[in-house]
Amino acid sequence: MTTSDLTHTSRGRFAPHFSLTGRNRAGLIATFVLGVINIPSVGMPSGDGSDGSDGPPVGVLVLDSICGVIMVVACAIAWRQGKRAAVRIAAGVSILQALSAVPAFFVDVDAWVKVLVAVVVVVTFVGVVLMLSPERRNTAVLD
Image (tube, rainbow, N blue to C red; front, side):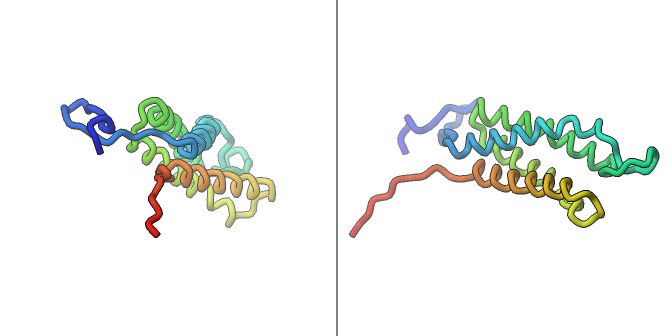
């Protein structure tokens, strides 16, 4: 590693340069879109039983909205500044958001809701794998 591979940090130390690959950016885009979709969750009808509507509990809706905001902010920081911590935060929060949707598989809801939840879980999984995939490095073959 040479000094050209290093970037100067705010504390006067040098840190390895982290550049996003195309796979990382694709994962960030998927997570960003899921985050934007989740932000208005708190306005959805809840299943608290007060108005007779079926839906997730209010706590889950609030959690999804908070997770959506954090996902959007973390993805924007990771995209603009290339911060590894922001990528990890976006991945962790998107996993938390997907886990909050899993109980829909175990309650009596319409089939389209279960399909929608399955799509969200799969997109979350693919987004996290892409975001956290390492950069490909060329290795010499020594035969």
